[in-house]
Length: 276
Image (cartoon, rainbow, N blue to C red; front, side):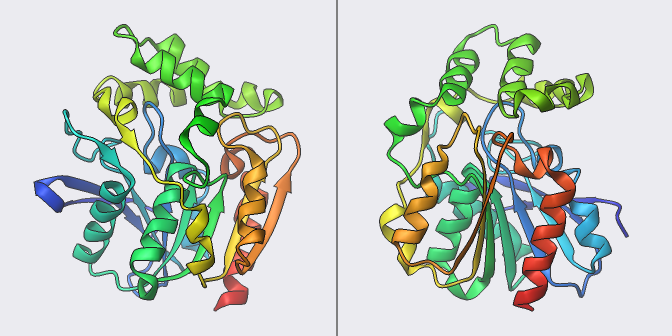
């Protein structure tokens, strides 16, 4: 039951979105949405998490966003938040999915919020880890991790050493020994196929002014040592009056679900149990 089955669905403009799926067909659906960055994919970002949810009876879906993993990688386009959202939503509908819990990290958090705003009846709850799309772009580009990623990936000779530097920047220094060569190689294999447009022409919105429209319960987690999305973003959710549970982790970077895997799994499952 924990074995991942991959399916590709043709969606908007003929793009194909890859979904990795596991768990009982009649289980409530949890969709894990990964962040941006060279080599990212659903399986790569959540391989330490999905089995715990399958074992708890959930049907797990790990999509690859457009331009990532095994999904289509079009060139010469703007990678907008709406395009990311619409293609994932269309792929989930093609899979016959009617209601979901969205679990999104970074850009995946932005996609989760946009999908909830667009299709509130489709989403029952959200779990967001260091979500993007709640600040103006200059705030993000001033973050050291984003600056490193943008500079390294824009170079024509993007190397595995650059890939390793980006991945290690995602986590707290105390966790860096856990970044394996296999993980770096896995992400580098994807990054070599990605068009530069996926980052250089990524266009996201600042959704902070619309957070109050989201009525679904939310669990929001953030690492205090995040170098990609500032944890001051917590304040936007409180100021908007969201139905939020907030958790802050010391000695954690951008990857709460990786750096605190067991805690993350337990907290999210407990949150979902309360909502059911």
